[in-house]
Amino acid sequence: MVAYSTESRALTPEAATAAVQAIAGEILAGLDKSTTQVYKKIDSTFRGQIGVEVLATMKLLHTNVCIMAAASPEASNGGRTTIGGYALLNGVPLEYTAMARDPL
Image (cartoon, rainbow, N blue to C red; front, side):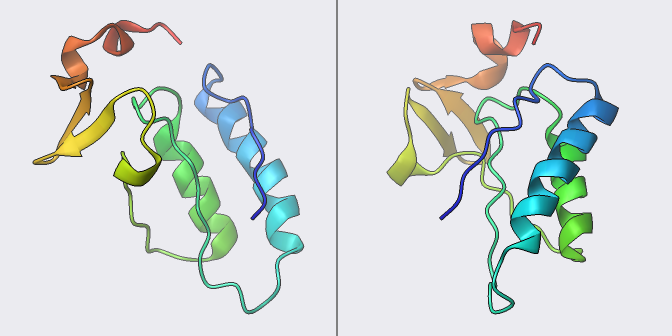
């Protein structure tokens, strides 16, 4: 597994797209052709430019299929879960937490 941070949470949509294209492009160029899955990490509290970053990754992969998982119980840290389609932080719906008002 290879992991890189684009540090793009506070960037504009255009700058976040460019950051993902640069780093993901390098990673994808080095992958074995038999690779069948790519994991694009998103912020579990939905901060940042999630949509444009996922679309940029999909474009690099030449795919129109993406499975989004906002929380992974096995990897959950800090109480992030998804129940009934709602993102929760320590059992509280995300839109009622301080994260929802985070300016970044």
